[in-house]
Length: 115
Image (cartoon, rainbow, N blue to C red; front, side, top):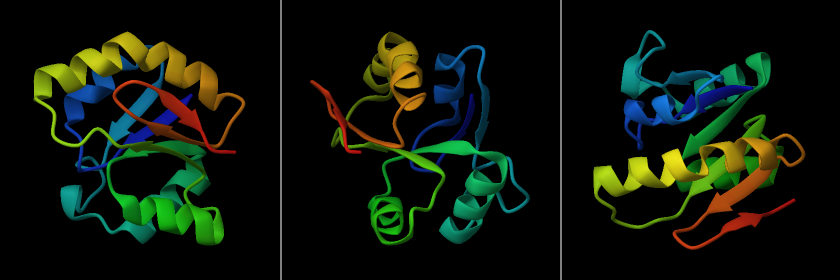
């Protein structure tokens, strides 16, 4: 499975998705300044699931089904160690869900399937 972690999340989150082709937005040529439209196009071209806290991707997905698939993180403020722990604990579950679904919202206490 191919993933793209947005700039609003640390690149260390990629480590939580072992066995996946995971890149962070700091990797494309413009790094963390990469525009959302480019991320959407890359996601569709490479069939990458975008994992982000940025609600602009929510509106883009609702309006035009871009990006390819979306995981929207809605935790509020969280320490980096807690964020990494969440993804280490739930990374495999998120991947399993995204095999059959195209949009989920991650909350501290639940994963909401939106499609």
